[in-house]
Image 1 (tube, rainbow, N blue to C red):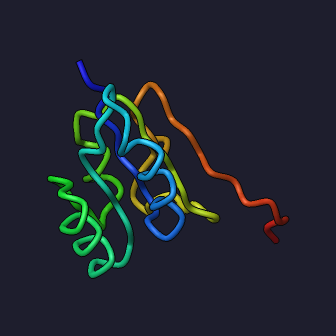
Image 2 (image 1 turned 90 degrees about the horizontal axis):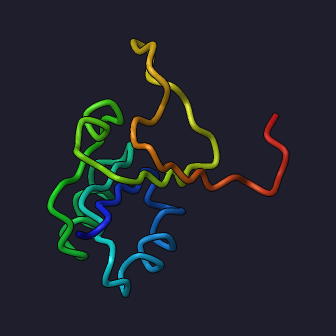
Length: 99
């Protein structure tokens, strides 16, 4: 059974896609980014079945792992839930201090 992976934040997330792409035991099945054109183009180019611009909708996918590849992550305004739902979550942190 393949690990179903979702990646949020495609400017930084493309490098994580390159980590999962050659693996036989995982598959990136959904991506999310706030810029619709970027999301749609990335999904189309890499044959990823689901593309989202809303993080809450992205999290409704049946994912085994989520990579949050955003330097600054903001919670959605109307949510009380944490920013991830998958049991396994990786967050790419910036090396610089964030004010």
